[in-house]
Image (cartoon, rainbow, N blue to C red):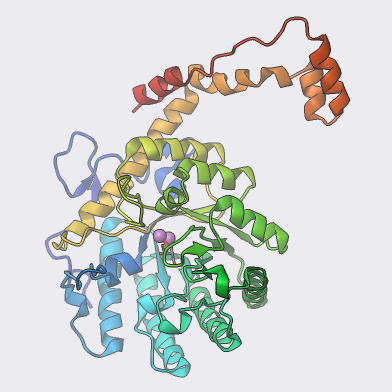
Length: 439
Ligand code: XLS
Ligand code: NI
Ligand code: NI
């Protein structure tokens, strides 16, 4: 159980700055550096995703896993889970990150019965609680994997069979218990199977009512146990379902409001889910932020030549800078952080690749943040949007905003307008240049 068992020869990753040629050092992510009034560490609350980094073997629909993780060799599920926890905590500590995120059965293999699973979770969370104490590593959020087991092939909370809904309820109860035991700051619902393959066999309205009922029960249970954190819905339009009910930020916000869940739930926005929904990352963040729903981020990126959830590590500085502009304007995240929901490629098979991936991801976010701060402080840029809407600042425009005009008033104003309508440039090329000049 030493702290230097799996990633031998790699020390704690340090910030060395842009001039460093050490591949195992941060070039931009300097945890203690102040940006816009907070340290980078506080802005981001970087988290490691247990599933991609320590469970995912690199299997794809065309072939078996390629990874030979040394923590995966024990055939006893409890010992294997402990070995994995040792590897995870060694890694997180060496990265210098403060947080991790998990699904229940990332921590330990699901048992053959609910009772067996419960016992296993009990044991492994005891072990992980100790590791948290030793290392100071915190839990950003927990969640339940209600999508992998075949019992969920027709959905979990939205399954047409009540017995499956009840089973999912039991599983979420145990996942909430585990999250609270490990002092989780938040809890996530991602509904991979909460959707449909065809409306020929689906009562969508009834399924959505069921989902809302289920979320309400989960929230009520956790609150009754004293859980103070935030619940996050993680929107995604499809995959594995053909159509998922939490399609995108706007759809999810509408759903939460319809069922009165908007005060306890916020959104966890994932980059690659935004692009799958034909949106940009900055679009989804903006929709969430406008409704005060920007809870947390799952950081990754898609591949723009194909259309699935490739979950690559972030490395696009411009995309991240645009996102960080929204992030800074919104005043950061409501309780969440930046979780690297990303995986190394199937043919990245050296243990150190996991370090390169997370170093690059953290540096990309740090660069994005630094660029965003500069752009927002650039008067040529920030005054532009304000001026663009100046016609609403006083006179009839201001009365319009305040709800003091009728449609007939608009008719009268348009009819008597002597100066006509002038072309006002949107100046996009200029603004793009300003952004690029700060990169
Ligand atoms: C899958 C999701 C998943 C959630 C947690 O696409 O991103 O990993 O983050 O269940
Ligand atoms: Ni995803
Ligand atoms: Ni995710």
